[in-house]
Image 1 (cartoon, rainbow, N blue to C red):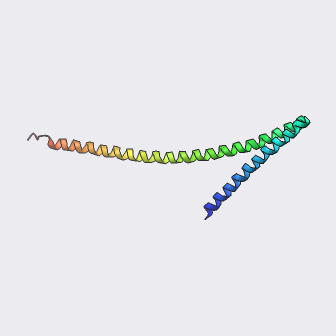
Image 2 (cartoon, rainbow, N blue to C red; image 1 turned 30 degrees about the vertical axis):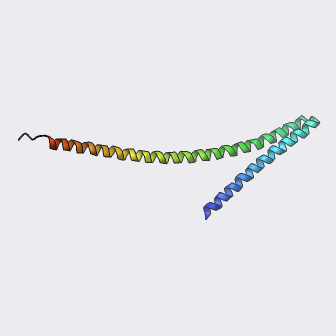
Image 3 (cartoon, rainbow, N blue to C red; image 1 turned 120 degrees about the horizontal axis):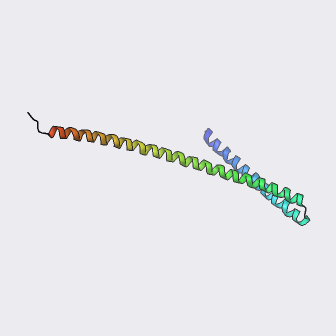
Length: 114
């Protein structure tokens, strides 16, 4: 029961952070556009700084989501590789046993020198 609650909270956090980033982008862009009419360089710079902060938040959120997906894929791949390694080891052991049995059969089939 704790896990689904954690997933819901994570989604709310992500959505909240993305919303804040979007608001900052919108506010920065609006501030810059308003400043263009007045030709106020300080306000334009402030607007672009706010816009950059919002954009940075969104980029970081996207990167963290991509990183989580990549880690998940790496774990799945690692598990698959471990299974393949296990099967290869089993095949190698079987091959060794078959070689030993073949050698024993050859020894049994050799004519005795009695």
